[in-house]
Image 1 (cartoon, rainbow, N blue to C red):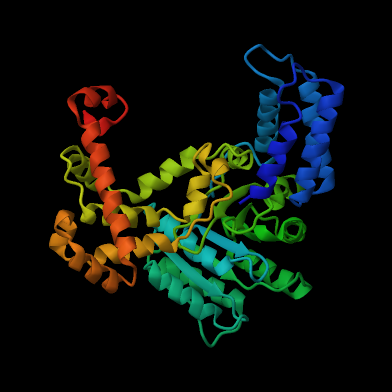
Image 2: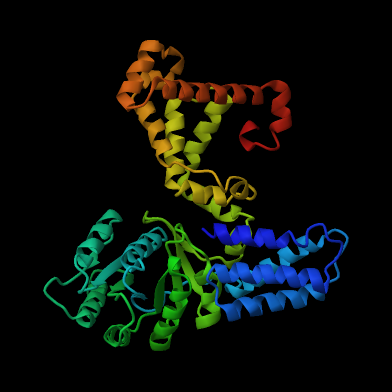
Length: 442
């Protein structure tokens, strides 16, 4: 996400790189380039102008210290201003009431139903017992969709197939939650293809009859400035508590994320990336600013890794690496863990420096599946002792996995290279040098 904006901002910073100091002339050109980059990212012109005017004023008022070049100073000023524009710090949802109620609103196609399931999964992992309430009685198969999603995450769904009154369904759903000891209610409401008075009146009646602790407006981030305008119309009617940006893994220009708080004075509380039901997280303005400026987001990367990697399993792997016994069973487990973390291209963009260096690289998500197929085509003994895999075995594995003998050979070579590398790292002289860097070498 934000690839184009990141690249345009990087080009703008080049104007000041190599300059001895900031002047009226070079800062004016740089601000012009940044303003164009923001407008191209679908940020409102007025917001983009105020943004660059503020940075220009601060830049001209700064004395550049010896350790910081004008280019570095400008990056810091842009970072600080982006963080400020997007809300300064993460804002959590306030779960008050008995039970707490989250009401979702937004246009059709914004991803409300999927988000309802994601929120249910998110809070289930934090010890809550959510109930999903299906109040979209207009869209064909909407109720069936939320039932399927609820079943995938083992969260019950309240619906009334013969009732077409969403206000009644919402109230009955809350009563059902109380009677079944569910301590969080998430209400999925109907959307429309565009804003209309009937839609607004209905969602307002649901709000008044349920008294939700949080109203979240769901925005498709790919719609850019249109999403901001829609948010304003909904906020005027509902006075919602926060925004959720969905589809951030798509071709997102960034306008909604950067300017929505300025327009509606309501924070972004969650971001949603990908189709998987665990692809949701709190919105952190500083982390997003880092990513927009191409500086990665290592904190989110580590958090994702910690959420999927089993500590005990990691210790076993470390021990096997230390003893040079890493085999295909271990490799298979590690690949499956990595796949749980999410979209590979998105993950790589979180690593400082790596995302920018590999921006033009294509990432074939199917490649991990091909490697998995090769390993699964091996016998248990072959996975444990790959050195026994001869020519005939390689052909059988290739045929069984639908790949080529060259693919099998390449995977065998990669495992052997990994083993050689670990053997060198465990050598007496090298081990001492690496002990402080790699905890498992101690």
